[in-house]
Image 1 (cartoon, rainbow, N blue to C red):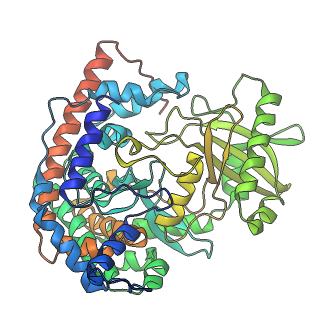
Image 2 (image 1 turned 45 degrees about the vertical axis):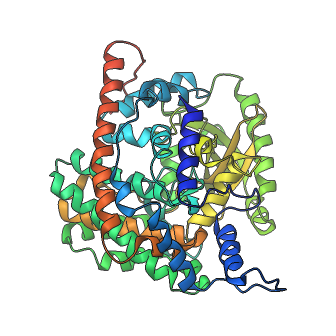
Length: 504
């Protein structure tokens, strides 16, 4: 990944400057325990005690506020590409390693469409850049690819519809600032993509970061269980949407999603009968059955991996999945960043009129690992699943992980379950700014679950110093992404990379 050693040094130096240079113990997922021990040690004044009381919220807030001395909030505004910055094309090609070769041109094509789609596929590039930016040393279970298209609505096991982060492929314990900065820059690029002014883009970022700061403060004052039970309910969220047209559009989509059934909608669209057995419909190049190693061998391997997935589930979920039988498995291309990784869809049947589709996604090393430390989990699918459980207010009951016979790691979840993605291309300026508010709220709730919200709140404070700094950073980094997109465009025109056009 370019000059990895330099980037590691840069992020380590940043943590040392903040007085928080300790690496996480392998059994910790956050810096919480380290922080608590530090404050307890100061409180004890060298006297031995059998039981040390936990720091009070006021003490945690003060400790967070103290971090401003060595990492000023205004310092987050800075972004200037270092002279030894890795070439963006080189990083993209590095991230192509291990992907299905014939799908890589599709990935290039999707990233070429706009600077915004490039950004969505360039999480690795930004991870390398973020490693050299200021950070307090406070860690959370980070999303790792926190852009505005990775938020959306879905149904909880209790069948409520909530709004949450919905893509955790890159999740890892890491600085909380990295998620905030990636989310903020995505709003600038989305606004530019919609033709909005720079003033509106800044307003959207300020709305997002202000919401994050204010909600972190709220969560820092709540009992721990209330934080874990909290969620962003879609009905409550919609009641506050000021734009009438946008509110009605989302309400209509939610109503349609609630009525949607696997049997009546997904099954006819995705499957067909082949003799007496249902199979997944081919729709190349996005859905297809691999010719090698042959249909029978492909299904046999899938069944072996599925058996490993079953073992990753808790016992009551095993009873549930045992009611279903695998009928077919096919490759399915998804997203932008995931294109070329081994992703698939599994068709299962409990009876002739009781289908279920599961999505299989390859889980590779997080883009954050070279800079935030290795995952403690032996399987990257397990890393992702535990990230979902830590970050989301409610997770898919089918979430599990497995390993393929070729050594690839995977995680599995439902293909669709009332999932709704934001129609950002249709947002007007009012909706974009308000969407920033909702995303900031959602990210704060996620970070409050695994981090130390009182310390983050103490650092952020009540004013908008941090908000303004991130808005400045977001514009500068959006400019950088547009420049990197130009590099990709020139490489495509020169024939240095292969690009495949997709059917409309």
